[in-house]
Length: 252
Ligand SMILES: Nc1ncnc2c1ncn2[C@@H]1O[C@H](COP(=O)(O)OP(=O)(O)O)[C@@H](O)[C@H]1O
Ligand SMILES: [Mg+2]
Image (tube, protein in one colour):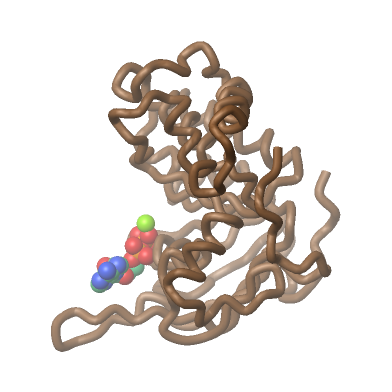
């Protein structure tokens, strides 16, 4: 299969590097600083849980890292490339190529079957139909849902929907997988299944950032970044604080 090549440099730069990142929201006449200067490096292959109370800025930060939004201040390097001030189109292009998203509410397209849902990012990537279908079926197999490929989203459970959403997020082979409260709509048993899938992806060397306010979920990650009031409160890797700019152990 041929997908457009990544424009990220292959140097040893962190995959995600943000410095003093700010996001200000205008609310009528007043404004609110949702991110107050966040600095963070995330290396290829890391599995990071982004935690913190509701309203602390997790989603805002994830949207900036995912190039769904642009910062009000600070700098963002994605794979060594400065993406702070990209145009709308450039951001969309970089996003489609480099980033896969998983959301709390799944966001599957209701009138498309599961295979077609997984194929959506491959349409953007310009893959021919046969290769799209092959790849979608492989990914559905990976998440254990090959036999349901022709079903509609309304015909499967919440946990299954999230697994389809993960397959879709992986379709275009992104360098970075972002998940915002991916288990927020799931019961604890199904949550564990989804987390097991994230573990598997991490073991394959993928880079994952999972936003969650559930400690059980955070315990699955090898690094926990806590956000409070729009700032990084703590950043702990496997029980030890990680030093900014320090190289992270090789992935398994
Ligand atoms: N579009 C917006 N306009 C105004 N305020 C916003 C907007 N989005 C988020 N906020 C505010 O920014 C803060 C952080 O929100 P968010 O990033 O969604 O937090 P979290 O994901 O940690 O719950 C909250 O106080 C929220 O009310
Ligand atoms: Mg949120």
